[in-house]
Length: 283
Image (cartoon, rainbow, N blue to C red; front, side, top):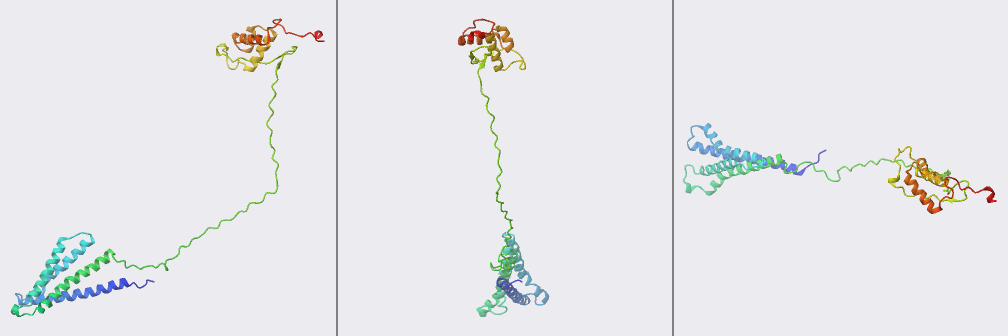
């Protein structure tokens, strides 16, 4: 239910009073101008005498309406101002001038002029006030809508979603976890040639690209296997060429390894044969 709005009620009351004032002022001014027209040239034509004041008063109405239109468009209309000024000044002047009539101007009391000037002036001001009320109603300068107080404002309703609380179960059982041991690293043992009491530590020189044998990757032995064959060839007295063929290495490379073994262990006493220790000599 809409509450009583004092501002709107006052605006409506002011509008009604202004309409009544405008109607009364225009009627008085219009009637007096009609009498002036009857007394000055239109005495034999009453219809035209009563239509003649409209040529002035309607200037005021037209000018005020045009000014209202310009105000709504936020513009200034010079024609509207000119029409309103011509109609207002002409109506006031003719109303005042018509007071004299056939009498001497000096014998007319001043108050008679004031009485004659009031209706057109009131009509001008009242119609202007009416246009202002209309302008405010159209543009909404005065907020006449229903005012909602903070007490009447609906409080926002907040719905909180319920979230189920999950309690974790207590863990009582312990499960043994097997930890895998890392595999043992095999022990590296020195090379021992059967039938010989000496133990040789394998020392392989840094390979030289110029000494390598150009063979396919599939036929080429690994460095460890090649070193074992070369050392075995040195111990057994195998020729350099045969040892190089078996180790898939160049002869120059095998010669270098043989020379290094000779420097470290001494040359073989019986080339081409194993240095065997006689079974009887050891006993």
